[in-house]
Image (cartoon, rainbow, N blue to C red; front, side, top):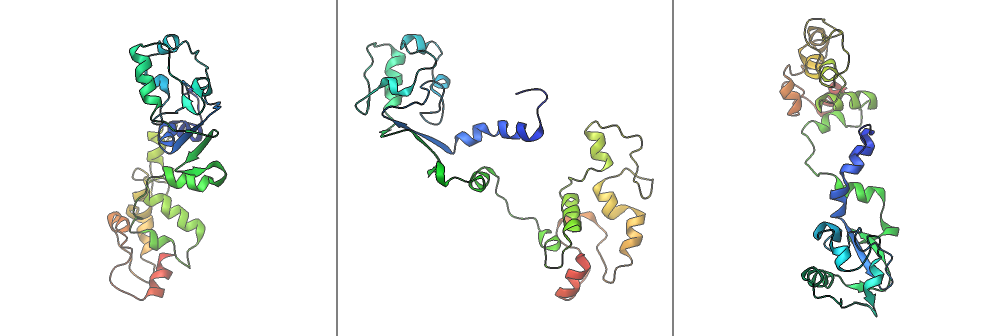
Length: 232
């Protein structure tokens, strides 16, 4: 991987091993798949399963096609009795030969595969956080919801994160109170300036960051409409 690689490209490249677990190569009778490089058997290239000397043992160059060792819909019998040739033959016999080459993603043909299906296959599924309903509701202001969502996920570019990223920060103190290190928790809960603003809300707001993470934004009970209004 290049040393100066964009974050998005790095993520895509690092996802290749995971993507291979969802891909399945179906080898055709006149296959144009690369015999040694494409993941034809058990989703792994043959060169990862054998020593590179096997290309010489089998007299099949590094860029050989799988179709070169297929005859009448069957894998050919090799002329050598070398142990690697026997192991390769045994491994290839686990792969069924079809009429023509095609690749599937989770058993879906290419024409049915969409970016959304790939995303849902690769993403790590998890239960939504307890606070998600407090920032996503009919009265939510998108800009405010996104900002709070980033804060609760600790993804806002606050000064503490800038320092951790090695960015040049002349003063790491909060831009509001100028007293403490600027963090998401400080900006949204611990800062005296923020506390003064929260006291002006009609319904009492919790004063602990952990309460927000637990999805408890208000103190006591109130009606649904009042709750939604206070979440603004």
